[in-house]
Amino acid sequence: MKRILPLFTVPFVLAAALVASGCGDGRQLQSVTLVPAAADAKDYPNGQIPMTATGNYSKQPSPVLLTSNDIVWCIGTSDGTCNGNIASPVTVDVNGVAQCSVGLTGTATVLAGKPSSKAVKPDSPSQLKVFGSAQVTCP
Image 1 (cartoon, one colour):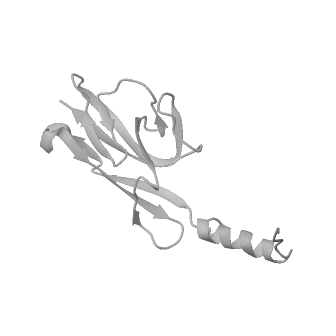
Image 2: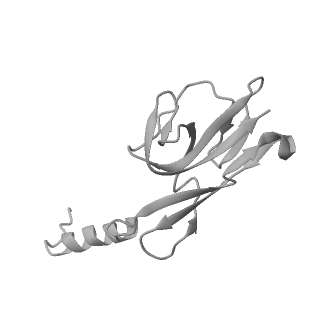
């Protein structure tokens, strides 16, 4: 036997789903700040630089420490473009730990932010719409 929901319950179910998913609360990420803003790998144990990202939102609570559930990390350019599959002197993992690539030296820009599309593709450039940046130097 099929159960049919009364017509008036459908809008309530949809509204509850939107509230539960966080949609419609009007809270928008406005900026991201990375700490440290500049780092030299030689100053960190094993050359691993733990970075943190703090998000400033349009509504409270703000600021908030961001996690990999909130943002993506990548190596890119100061305009918020993730490099994709390009060799860089620095790599960064999903938790914001930056490290020098073996055999490469130089400075790279670490980015953390919200992607402008559903997912950042690891093999092609992707644009972040709200992001913060930091400079990491590899000796």
